Image: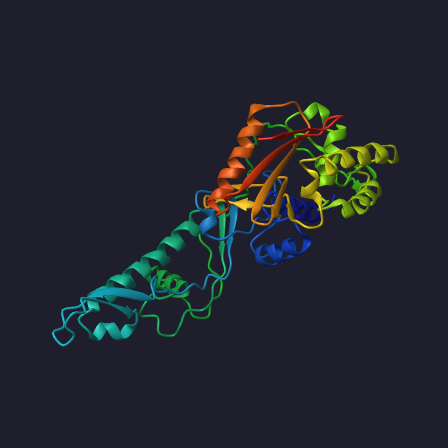
Length: 367
């Protein structure tokens, strides 16, 4: 298998565990992350590992190559907060100043000098980390020091200063070696479990192995998981798409097209819908003269959302209808009472509540 292909698949998997899942979102994520990611090499593989000095802290390697050892001293902070005691600026006790060499000619010279020393210490610490990582050999690739090397402001100046102190500095010499060369003796690794090696990828189209039915969730009954395809659930799903009697036939056609119901279900479903639409209490609530919202979201200030099955607005009055497919339960009544309280908080006062049990013969309770 191609390790780079394995890596990109791992990256996709990592991305998919988050909240975003579309291809365009992945491309945006990859554009931001691609320069920060690298192929993970297992321990024991004969390979070169490339990492920053900071990430190498606490690690050891037989051989370390430190390329581009040209780091210069950089101030750790671009700005400094200072205390002011200037009688010409009354009321201003502190100020934020640029950290620059001009501060040496002011009363803030000590602050600037302290910041310079901190920056120098950071450079020394960086050099300490990289030079204490190798077990056998260390290769440093640097550049020639500046002509004015009286101040140690860069790594090339550090190395040149060290060579001068040791009496080894030669402006014409480009390579310096220290220590005696000894062959590397690899450590005997502790036996571990054999790593899993993928010899090939299974690249068959997953669509040939996994079939997904659209609309299936609309038929699930979370309260009675053993009756997920109960007939009443199908009617429940249909009612969410019907505002009035005129919408029955289009809803049935769509349900048949998408597999929500079968051809054998059409007549029984029609029968149940007719029972609902011609019920003396419910019939007026399905006419074309009322305003209907099916499964509307009621958002509370704390972020919770409630979703009644049907709310009907008719000349200042409101009717709340809740469909149920299981057995009667006291919590159904509490659910309607909760909807009533929420609607009253929204300013509605004349509220009627209906429980419709979608059994073989529908049962309507006005509560």
